[in-house]
Image 1 (cartoon, rainbow, N blue to C red):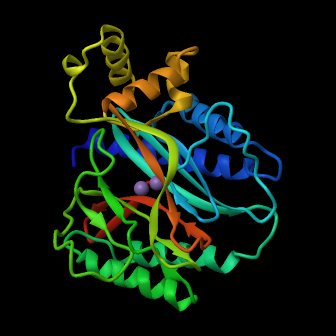
Image 2 (cartoon, rainbow, N blue to C red; image 1 turned 120 degrees about the vertical axis):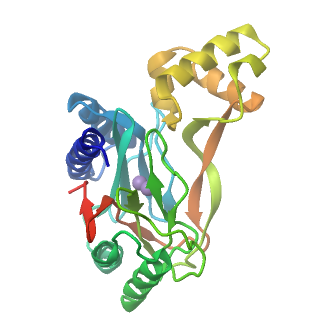
Length: 301
Ligand code: MN
Ligand code: MN
């Protein structure tokens, strides 16, 4: 990896780690979701990073993919199991990291430790040429040793410039798939999820997280107004996901109408929330690593 690129990944990692820990400290009973999401995203920008994806705040049986709207009324409640997932980029080079916080109580301490230990065990194994099926097996064994299940259909992923999922998956269960072996200089986000539910997520309601549809070009949009708006969105967020809150910063009065219209036209897609199938509680921990020498460097600590 080029020195300049390496430095950018490391800077993104430092900012993401700091923003994640800062955000985790804000999660308290009665605090609103948009308060935490906005504070973390502002912190990222203050520190010189870009928001690689909206801060995800996914609670209890929601494993991933929820970000609050600007006027979201949700507040944290006692015993909520909160996954705070933060993405930062420096010139497109991304760090992706998550932590689980239980509000006030310690009822799910073990399940939080299960995903955290699984992540540590995976990181210990990851090096150029590693079989990612074996990494998944280790994650699965570690989580099961605590009496929980890994979420089988959520995976870690490789990262590239302005690309949050560049093709390689890091499984959370033992699998023969994924024969692609990561190489020196590859960047991976590793993210075990543990649950007391089924170990499988399904799509739920809207997440308030959007992405420009890759196959669409603005010239396919017939209406002039939508065309201009779409170009602005693409210029601001490029190939990265963005939120209703982010859209509101560019279009203070019309964000909701625009998002509805462009989603209807198919130029944007809204991600669904990912919900545990049996409504089990879910915990997650995530770090980003750069593969080098005979191991890997964690950028997000
Ligand atoms: Mn993440
Ligand atoms: Mn990730």
